[in-house]
Picture 1: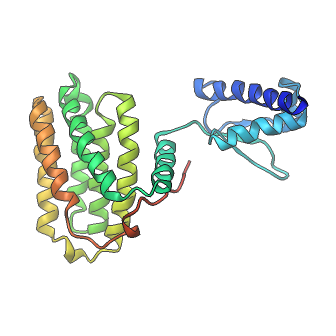
Picture 2 (picture 1 turned 90 degrees about the horizontal axis):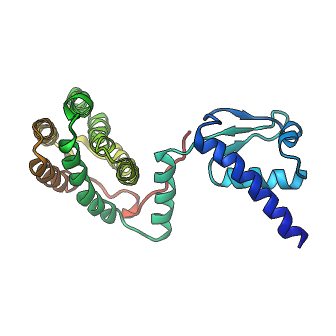
Picture 3 (picture 1 turned 180 degrees about the horizontal axis):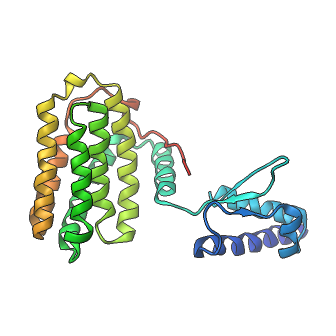
Length: 251
């Protein structure tokens, strides 16, 4: 019974600190007081407090600094955390990259259409897409850099769809695919994807921006789908044996 009570106390402390982090009362990067001071706010045993910190650390909400420095650093959750966790689940389930590619072919055109639906698209969507497109055009001669810039354009399409839930979920898939693309293009002979093919892919980006600016929902969805079919089939060496690769969790 004592063990159950100890665990329950730890969960209550973790619940309170978690709510402070998620509500923004504790900002990302803030350092929690050292154990002795923290116990003045939470008058519980050392074991309960340490277990609470372990719970929060396992959730990725704090990074516990051990040794003389001590304390715990607050880490507010981000879309990157979702991508990290999703990549682990897909890897554990033996999911292959074509499965991720298919998912993107379903959700990214939807996001492109939602960008075109936004009443504020000319002010808050189109300028960011044009900036990403301009960067990709300037990088087109360098395959690795062009791939990264191009992926940023695709990530923007999802990020700017106007629905936060969809942006986070689809954004996790984009992050996983972008990691894969970075790996495969860095190992790829630049001649495998000729400059003309890269320019053609970027031309599609430019056309998509025009459709979104015009509010052409069906046209944006259609072009986004055919464009993804084309770029996902571009030749490149096998990377990671076709399996989802776990991501690095960066704060």
